[in-house]
Amino acid sequence: RYLIFHGGNMPSTTTASAADFRERGFSSKGQATAACQEDGLNLRFGNQEYRSNRELVLVAVAQNGMALKFAGGNLKEDRVVVLRACQQNGMALKFGASFLREDLGVLLAAVTQNGLALGFAGPAYPPAMPAK
Image (cartoon, rainbow, N blue to C red):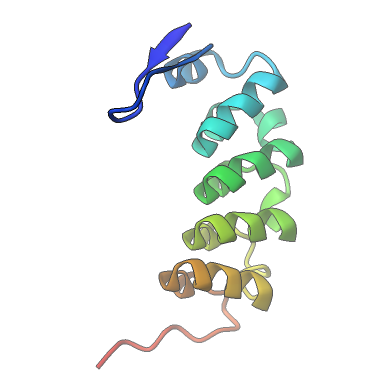
């Protein structure tokens, strides 16, 4: 077990550190889920099986939308996954499939969360006009 300090808060314990995941990956789906609940970006340490697991990716993007970058398989084409990522962090739109970057519901969720996400809108939308 490792002792982890969070800012000035009380320490918490966890069974593995990010360095452990980087070196060995996850030893079980339960460990992967716990790690992604703590920090969605821990998804990057998973093997292709874990990165392609819809349930695990949904946990990761709900915690940190930018974890969509590490989603495998066809999950970047899954509207629910991309929508959840964009609701958490609009800039995750960058990693969604191009047809979802044109989806009005996904685009609206992303831009509502972060207006700068409009820069990642699909080709059906003209680029944002520069301010004069």
